[in-house]
Image (cartoon, rainbow, N blue to C red; front, side):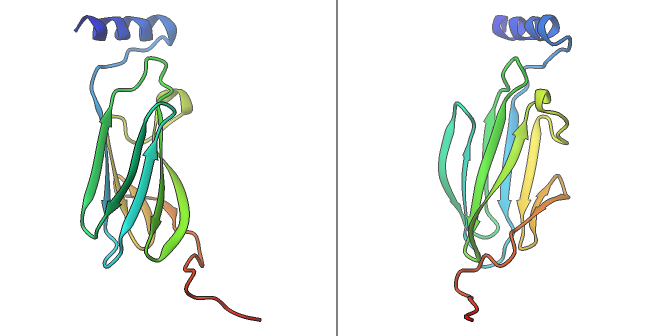
Amino acid sequence: MAACVFVVLMQLLVMGKPVTCQETVVVISNEMPGEVLQLHCHSRDNDLGLQTLGYSSSYQFHFNTNIWGTTLFTCDFTSTHHPESVGIIVFQGPSYGFMPCEFHCNWVVTPNGFYLLGQFEKPWPQDTNTNVRTHT
């Protein structure tokens, strides 16, 4: 509790705005029928390792943001039909600008791309299926 009070006071002094001691949760769900999703999430200080998700399954992790508001988590995604890695910022602290989620970031990965809190954010790259090539 004393650490939380210290963090709040530091935020008020340094950035002029309070911070809560609430934990942030990131949930990533695979909603691509018949596809296996692989993801590797990391921040500057934490590497969460490679995760493999079958269809209709989820992975979640949680953390507390730092007092400077510079916490940033990125995940790299590949799937059965999308072997080219796609990097997504799944959480960014307020120092980087607006992000629609603060304490609960719910990501859904579909055949069309990536959705955050039900809003479309980014498509899969085009023509990433390495099994289909045209020869000239």
